[in-house]
Length: 375
Image (cartoon, rainbow, N blue to C red; front, side):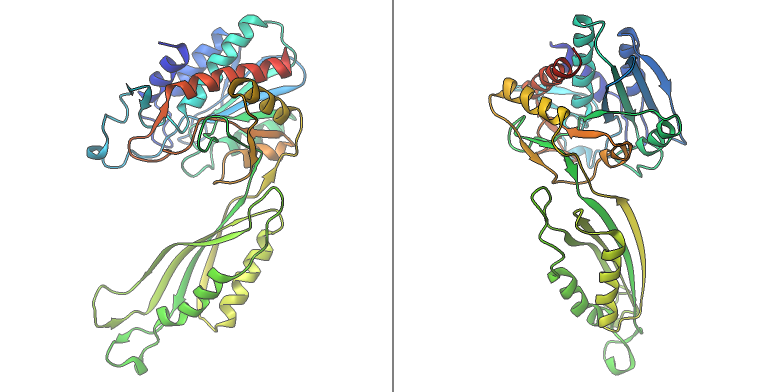
């Protein structure tokens, strides 16, 4: 069994449902310490964070990732126990196999190999590992970055091990992400008997034209790096449960994934204008999950493209699609960011899995990036 597969399996055995780390970072830190890293623990609340560094001066290349995973879902739907890793026909099953314990394992074993062969490498290698990425994302990477800023520490390049590949390993890397803005909306009406609609005010009927306009609204065309801004409803709820009662209020949750052409303030104002135009009585709360970020082509992305081309025989597509990641926090340090990992086809699913060969390819790619940038 390869070392990177063995470490991935060891991490999967830790039931680290967010925000629990369940011992994953102790395993990682123990190995990094043996490779000459200085370990600094940064716990905040329930969240465990590890900041590890090796070497001196600049540049600093940081590997970043998370040990926490999403809940398993119904256990009876799994082919195997989600926290008992199982390899079947060259495929590794287990919660976190794809997102992203295989990425963490590949970072560690690639770094171990690199420092063994290059004990006096240039600059610093760093690891930023958190157990708060799949949850609230408040006491994890965000807090570590705030601490690094207070100490005037910098990160030149950051490789995030999120599963970035789409159809085959190495076909896509992320060089940015869209922003995420969510709204919690309450539409007020007047409850009444369904047979006497003139004595009530149905908030569902009131909201329907505004919802149609919000869904059809053209926010922007995106640009060469970003998809257009999109509006999606996540939840819509009204009614008492009785079939003869007009509800008195409607509750909706929605999300805008937006490109850098937009601002949070501009999106909020446009949503409010549409609601006001339909003369709705409403209350609206906003939640910002992250601002968009983009890393222009530079040494890190060039090294990633070169390494993947050597490993897989073809260059990757550069993308900013998908959800948010902790890159949104690290980008505030002025860091160039690349997200490079295994395929993402089973993330957060029952029977999460990844091909073993992809983990091995990822390890080789990470080591080659280290050689290109720090040898």
